[in-house]
Image 1 (cartoon, rainbow, N blue to C red):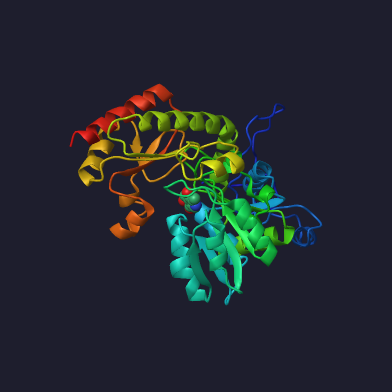
Image 2 (tube, rainbow, N blue to C red):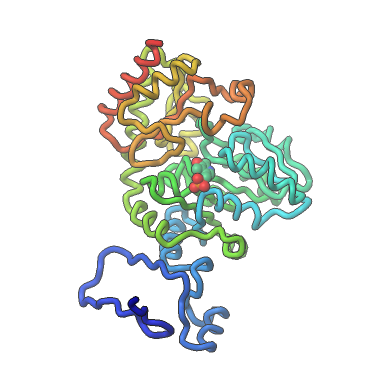
Length: 393
Ligand SMILES: *Cc1c(COP(=O)(O)O)cnc(C)c1O
């Protein structure tokens, strides 16, 4: 066995007068300090130094800086998943006796956290429609501490009235947390609209390659950032260096991927709307979308990279469509460099009753597309082939 240099001695890493152009990946779990005085200074903030990777490490700190910049946040914490970010935002702010109001179309696990887990800790939760400020106002209680919304909802792509909800909450001293995963910072920067906390599943379009599971919570209030950071360290919600390193690499192409995916999505939505057998197309930038006006004011008219559509509402048609969608992964995620297709009735919304799904407009023929960066003409051809197969059953 080869001995590794130990203690305060430096590892024998080969030196180079030229510098690498890529950030180093630092997987070390633990950091050795020269003496107790220095360690003491590290903990007290007098000296900068890492101690243990669950607390902090260079790859997370670097990624945090980039994400703070993207969201215009005063500070933020990178977490081990998007759900860890949702958990950090909620648990750092609410306490037993508080009420938490959520949007009625949140990500499935966020809904589950609110319905199953938080009530066990004495936190009351309820849901209301975030596109309707009057409905949100009617659902507030004297003990409401926070409102959790998503800018653009899954899978019906409704756009929340972020400005209206922020104005309402500010007047009552209630915090607003916005899960901005679908919209991305290119669609909206919630903190600039007055939200208190912004949340991301970095796993999705920000990292963009389906090879890193990560989240982020950002805020402008330093005390709030600190509470979310300490809670993440204590509960082990923090992220691995390797995932942070991959996400940093992905983030450098985020703008280009966003532009390309959004342009492709607009074209695919238009093409789907003209295809025989497609009964509904949902894309926020289209004139026929219920939140078209808000897309113009809140999202600068950008429809984003997600498109939903519906064909004949039968499982047989859905199976035929997926089988004929050549080269398009049928996978329950979004934001990958390549287009992915999901079927909410058998994945994200499978826990609902058929009536519950019908109330949201999700039938067996409903599909959600996360549009990628492929050639648009080729993509449209593949979808035309898939829709034709669904029509044939
Ligand atoms: C995927 C997703 C999450 C959860 O993120 P993970 O990284 O999978 O934990 C939360 N919110 C939204 C809107 C998402 O799409």
